Length: 154
Figure 1 (cartoon, rainbow, N blue to C red):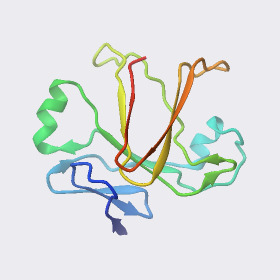
Figure 2: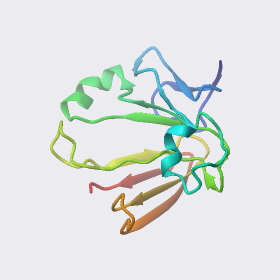
Figure 3: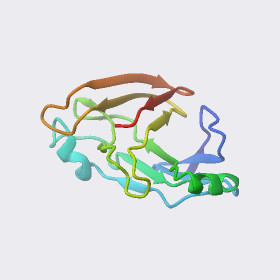
Figure 4: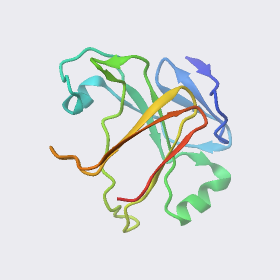
């Protein structure tokens, strides 16, 4: 496993572990073993479900943070996560996650905002109002290392 430094310092001791699409945590950082999302798992969300592309597509670790921040994160019911994507394309689409809905969270009773902070590379952060045939309002934001994109509640 090769460890790769990030292009942007996120203020948390975390390194990319390639080629596994995983993370290495510093001694003062907590977090789970990243979950790996395989191409077959996200095929239903792709424009070309039978396409070729990198496999695995991405690794995700939710509920990570600095040990010193854990009490504040728990008190405020905040969740911090990290995602690493494979290089390449999924057919004619850029490599991407399968997406998710910002429903009302059962643990807090509200629909949380989400902040995307790009640590290395480039990204298109895409959001839509609904996960239906008519997605409603759609927004795409181009971001690069050091940029932050805020998706408001709802």
